[in-house]
Length: 141
Length: 263
Image (cartoon, rainbow over all chains, first blue to last red; front, side):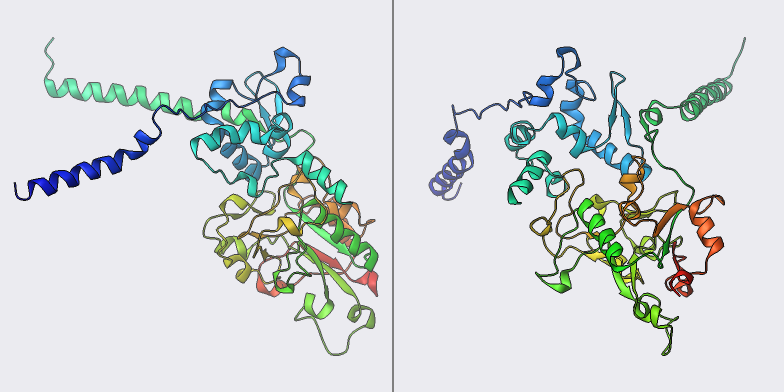
């Protein structure tokens, strides 16, 4: 090999550079997200009714697909009644139904989204905290 | 029994075609879970073709302002008038006669027409130019005639604004939220880079409510099903002389103006 010394040193530097983040963060696990469901609206419900529109594992995996479906049904077909997995009927609305229970947007939605580095743009149009939006307005008056 | 390889393959192919075909057909034709899961609300107002009749005799300036205020408040329409007049976003607004009805204007015309401000909005055309040009199908026509927008699909190309002959569409040049005076937390806002317009209050019809402007108009705005000959709109069209905005362009506007009550 020509210039073996230089090449090997170069390779070692490259290896150290590429793996730097792993060594730098070794032993420091990021906090596992714990989305909170202790909002007043949920606490008010009796234990047995504390269920989302679909089962928890389904919602964990597929809430974004469900929201996409909800949007298409509402906007294109004007079908705004959704029958959940328990047979209960819900109004199809992110802002008025989902956030009614999950009013803790930062402790519920953001908790995982931040951990995963996801920035959904739901909130540039949908109001993430409808109640506080209304309250803010009252105070302005 | 002797059966040739060729014969055997033919029979198997035939059998599986029948089995697979009938299974697919059954799945396609059977009432799916999906359709039953999403239903219109029982109280929703339904029509074959929504239309509006404006009785200009009843639409004085105060009523018109009330309609505009109600619409813009409910739909979180931003007010850019002070920020930059060229950024104005409006769902419903006023125009003088000669601007609202070009082609019908003339130099000498009844003073009461000439001085009147007409309330104008998206005409919810039956042959909408905006729908034809939209490259993403963000603007589309519902079965009941309402020309709707799916804001999620709007890419802000503004073809629809160029196509619409009524100026009913406006672009959000900047984030509209700081410019929303009265907030309605039940309706979303828009974001920078999308076009918006009147939607005939589709979200209210779905809840069994009349459009916001109709509700506050004291009977000046009549809303109903054009396909139903006993509806209020058909009655108004039967009994009065009505005009439409730029009908010669062929977009078939579905907002009619009663002018005989004005004279």
